Image (tube, rainbow, N blue to C red; front, side, top):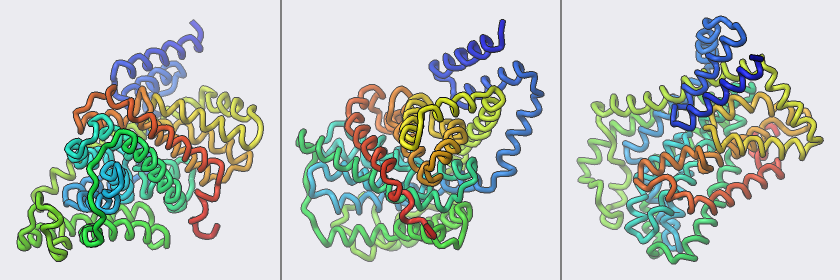
Length: 452
């Protein structure tokens, strides 16, 4: 039996395991193990490679910290205040609550940097309210899933950290580059949302009240401060993305501890309507006690425990593919397409197809080191290609058959996976349209980067 046949059998075998629901980490791990035996590589090389990923990757320390930030702002009540502000601004438009959930996803993403955390948090908070407001439950679940796609584009972004680590690009530049494309993604999805809601007559309209907007803006000030703190620190170079993650965690912990007693003293009620609250009471959130911190940290650690091994084993897989010559094969194929636009659109097609069956993390770790140098060789600016690459990867979150955000939204809302697919189609079209614009207009990715 030839080596090519064995490689095919191993690849088909792990693909079947993936289709049967085996976790991606184990699927990639089995493939790496099989290739190690085939290539007669010592197994201790795998352990050394896994260890090197984290001992040599200071930037990756930001990943668990931003995941923890997302859980802290959710438990403290900051996320709820951000969603209330978005609704007060958009609730007077047809589909305003659904559009507000998309806006809340953008605001939440600007602190957490995670697609799944964004989908889970906003979906669990606003899905019941959307259903009560007359929206189809399938549409409301699909809206939460689609809104979560901006979680890895609007800075800070966990996947931008991974991309910068792999390609040796300044992570602060990548963060800034994602601001305009991320805002465009939210805007595009809001437009699609408005069309669907206008056609179906969904949503109860509320009166546009300047006082309500002011009160909710005051109530969301801690969220705005956290967003500004992260972006200011990274943009001005006051601290690195890893340090920014640590600062944000510290800020959220202090806010949580201080606001809990203040919220009780002011008689704040979690279920009270905004109209019943004074502006003074809106200044503090519900907070959390020190006794709750271990459970919050444990939840974040569980998510990190899923992502960290996946990053490590995917890096080893990338090395295996390099030994097998896969990078050269893909590189030759993309290069043979021709010049600037041919390489750009071929790369986008490859990322889109890969995103349909893999999570953004392995897609980035496996394909980015192959495609980025080729794109640079034909004149595509590295940071701009990073944004194009990752916007394409984010679209995979709502693209079957994998569609991670669809599974997350299904889990938190109780709507079966296949029932919400119908309402993701228009969001998918809107995101692809924005993706094409970002790819064709490089300045959208580079305009805000200092010294450009």
